Image 1 (cartoon, one colour):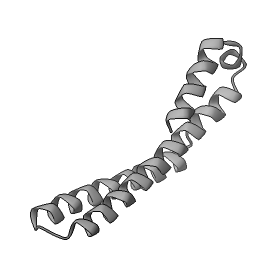
Image 2 (spheres, helix red, strand yellow; image 1 turned 135 degrees about the vertical axis):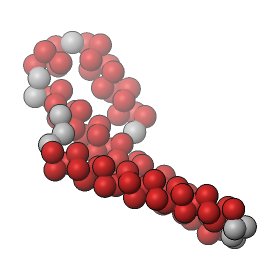
Image 3 (cartoon, rainbow, N blue to C red; image 1 turned 30 degrees about the horizontal axis):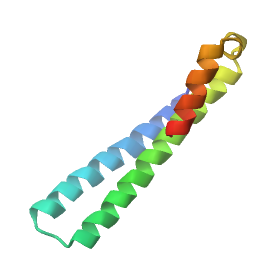
Length: 86
């Protein structure tokens, strides 16, 4: 489970990503240079990966603190699969 502070931080990050995505749309609409657009897309990908890692970290921490979760083989397999995607 995420703390209130962590949740607020992730929401701020997601709002920033949302603004970056709108900016990329404008750049495409304006016919901006592809290199600039690709650079902005790389920034958005990095930011979303960061959000994913933080969420996975919160999920992992919650599972590690829950003995029922650790005893459930399917939960552990799900956790590993999740971490492989992030």
